[in-house]
Image (cartoon, rainbow, N blue to C red):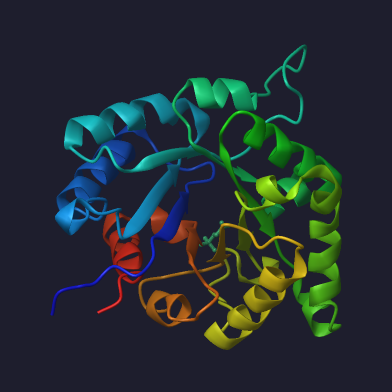
Length: 260
Ligand code: PGA
């Protein structure tokens, strides 16, 4: 049966600190062969795919995608500096990322919040920096298992979102992508059930004064659980970690956004 595109879904690969030149070549070739980025009838792509490799691989991945024939696949960074420029050794500005061909940026991933002490105020500043330079921010929020068990999930998410309301105006909020990533589901194999994820997504969509551009679910998304998650009305796509390092799995997850 032909697959009919629903409104453009979004699938983002977060390679974290994994990968190699060999992997990016293999991924570009497999994605090009899968033709997921090209729509029939020259319409918009059914699924927008974004790859976020480690920074040194952004330029070679861009070249590989063009060489393989998948120019519709876009690139994103895994983080950016809250500063515009200056003496910040090791940091990378939104302006540089945009200048090097990035169109997206993951911001506030839970690994950065826990490993680098990043606060919600800093993530809001980073979101504003990304928008200033035309990058679409993918802001990650999520609760720990203890917070979920204590029944404070919505309170925690509200706290993580609060600084955005002061840092951004309505037009900026509309450009934001939010990824709900329950920390207990990241890299653990324990996924939020479609019902659990849908409940939280509906809460997020109605919580902000202006609804975001898209809401992604992230946390142990695999080919087997992706179809049920993506069938939920408030789940517009996924932020994929481990499964985005295996071309066949990542392609199967992207296909799960296409409605039969
Ligand atoms: P995972 O990672 O798919 O490996 O759980 C998701 C993420 O951390 O973005």
